[in-house]
Length: 497
Image 1 (spheres, one colour):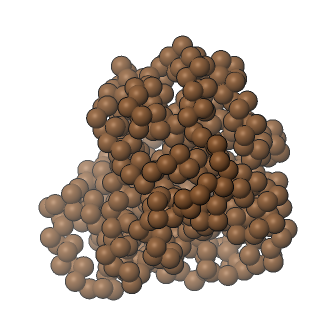
Image 2 (cartoon, one colour):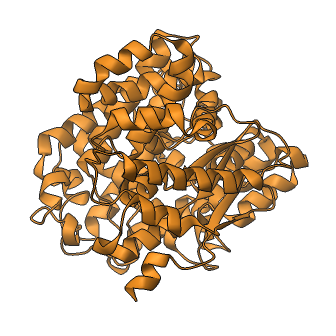
């Protein structure tokens, strides 16, 4: 969306970001006026200027695979407003104002407040220089008001595909085998169809052709940056990046598609009572580093394949986290077969724990000896769609419980058996899938909720195995997404009561 992408002639002269920032300031600021009522003039202006925002408040909205808000819920609307304010905060900082950092850090944020633990460690309000550097990097390609406006439009529409009504209109225009409940894919289809774009995305349609191309190119990748570093996405999720026209690697398009994920997460907790986003160090700084690393790898090796790219990306943090095991692992990695199969599976399993599990050698042994079907799933070589476990990192990391040292490996062995069971249950529902060339998302949050409910009484991998017994998978009509349904209470839970 930078200088090289965008037309130098604005399509809508006079469209500026600063008046919106001024209205936000006029509301009183995050400390004294954090809610929707006190910022009603700002919100009214957003609604008047961007008709697409109404989509977030109409009908049923899909918040995650298999989960929908009640009809008419404003949840996604306020999350999107939060993402918009995160961008305006960055814009304010680019003007050398303190208001921007205040918006994303100050105020009563409960545990995430700057003077609370863990807020004082990860709230960027305590790291002004780091936040300013983030904003500087973001603004590198934002050479004019038109660039900022285009990014604002990007954020306004970024999640409209979560609307059932929006996806229905898009899917009704497509052949059956091209239909999907994936919200990014639905948005990309609408962006690529001139008639749908005029009907559903009028603000986008008023941008220059080059800017429209930039937005479409980003969403056309269907890539999920937040799920990358934790090994959550399936290998096939890289295909869109690898097929992307290389000009978009160099001109800022891919950077700003990735940045939108950061602003999106910043606004994820926003609601009617607190519309301001939060800038957290792991998101703002961690994702920026991951983004830069990934784009560099794509730039350095234009012919790289999906498994190699995934392996190389995860290997960077693996080496930092497991220096004592890395030499042995590197020897095994001299085999390309190992890298693309068991090696990649090892890296993904460890990444799912955020590299906090302390016995990487046992993970490698278990995957080499006992879990070949699971390796195929993790390495992107199953027959049929590739499965992504939505909330998979929480499932494994929390499912392991407190024993992350696990000298015997029994804890991890049980946890891997449980995850293998989940994959097999999902795979059985995909036997008649329309094709194998897509990522299927299975929401495993019901299992995560069981773990959270148990709290300190959770018994680790063995209880995880018990919890998934008898589970079912409920898919959508298109077999593109599903959610776990637990059929019986855990034996451990029954004993506890």
